[in-house]
Image 1 (cartoon, each protein chain N blue to C red):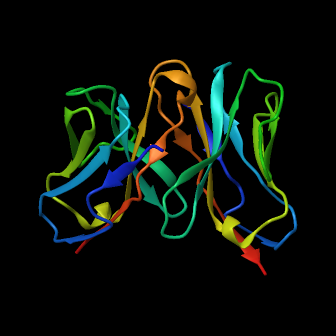
Image 2 (image 1 turned 60 degrees about the horizontal axis):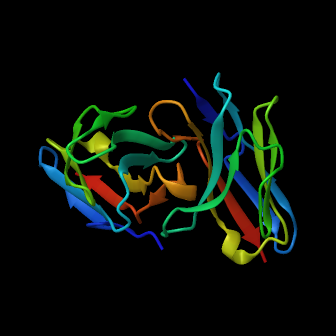
Length: 115
Length: 115
């Protein structure tokens, strides 16, 4: 089974802090994604990566950056956290090969609260 | 840009009954994939069912089936013999095969199962 893990289930930070959310997948997937989930808005893509050291902006990249130094790990960084970044953050990964093409597998999510 | 719309924020059904969740989407692409994802309370999002647009036959997975109407751009999910474990947020999602593998999600439908 594909396993996607996220470093924290719950996180509380203060405004202005630098925040790191980490995601690790164990299936050698090429693609990794960061989403933000808010009630009534569904999931919105923040950033994604097709390969190591490669990143592309999603639909709502403002206020976020990412890092992918190793294939299995994809980090989301909030340079200076703000209260409007309080949300659930979901990481996902997918392969570009085989019958699982395009199916994304999700981590458990990190519920971030910025005070 | 592609959009996905779930017009039912909440649905409820009696245990053992059948329920249908609605989803419509907008795209100019001719080939794509559609998905239904399930997110149980405080648990990981998992894939329920997936449909390739070029396939005429509606996908089924045990008690879950879809009604895919390509011309109408409609992709509804039918859950038969509803069980308490089916209670969750359900998200409809779209991905095109051209360009970036970006999932576009609907707003979600919260399904409650009444015992």
